[in-house]
Amino acid sequence: MCGIVAAVSTRNIVPVLVQGLQRLEYRGYDSCGVAVHSDGLQRARSTSRVAELQHQVTAEKLEGSTGIAHTRWATHGAPALHNAHPHFSYGRGAHDAARPGRVALVHNGIIENHDELRARLQAKGYVFDSQTDTEVIVHLVDSLYDGDLFEALKATVAQLQGAYAIAAFCKDEPHRVVGARAGSPLILGVGTDKLENFLASDAMALAGVTDQIVYLEEGDLVDIQLGKYWVLDRHHKRVEREVKTVHAHSGAAELGPYRHYMQKEIFEQPRAIADTLQGVQGIVPELFGDGAYRVFKDIDAVLILACGTSYYSGCTAKYWLESIAKIPTQVEVASA
Image 1 (cartoon, helix red, strand yellow):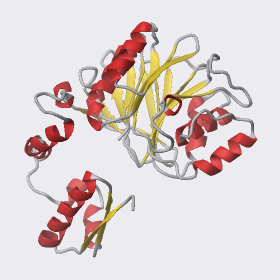
Image 2: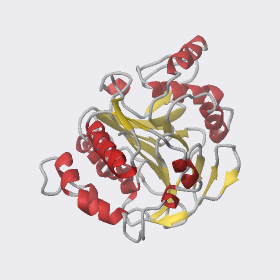
Image 3: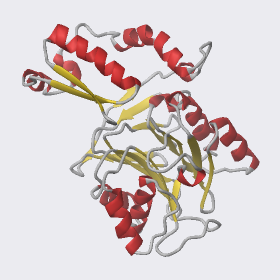
């Protein structure tokens, strides 16, 4: 799963962004990158490890107080530098790699109607550098931008079909990052100094930076600025999401004595389950949200779609659901 880290601050935020990517390395990735607002947009990208990106950032003296960062697993397009995030939009009919772009954006998920959107944007004069569905989003945001990045993103996601977690910023609006989520996780981190705020795909990315976390809900849009933030729900109504104290330990994302992260995850499963169930008196439908009891009552069969090791987890779930809950369960390979 890809990883996102974003921040708005008054300090140089690049070390926090890169450190956040390091804490997300356990997810796996084949490229990584960071972009900041510094007299326009600047970025560094790599098809190597985050450690190499760190060397690149240091050598280029990349600094900025607003930025986004990303680790990518290739879906649309090979794991190559031109496909690595963050992606820039240079504007309609204009493209020059040496010229700063206007909008920078990172994205997790899959946009199903990217071909249709790409053709429409190309007809408007947008030039594409990559094969990614993400570059479609950044150009679409640029095409809809009229001085308010949040409104541009709101109009953009209304045209997207599929799953996404998005973070973006614009050279014309320093100290502002906007985000949206549907089908992919995105969290808001409230800065402890009351000025800086963060977005991330995982609270682990912000361990040691802030423990004040807002879990954004399906369809939410978020706008973070210096000392303030707000959230709109899927109906574009302003909402207050609960701020929770989450004690994410950076050591949990470190490899430690294990040979690889899969081995680490296997041996840490008992501890993970114990932590998850801490304080839970019993497994009841209410744990899964309002209305779960009514939904569960109407289930007469379960279909699990999964790939890779998730498929094997699905097979285990099938055993449990059929033997304990007595619910017929089918497991299919999602990529087949």
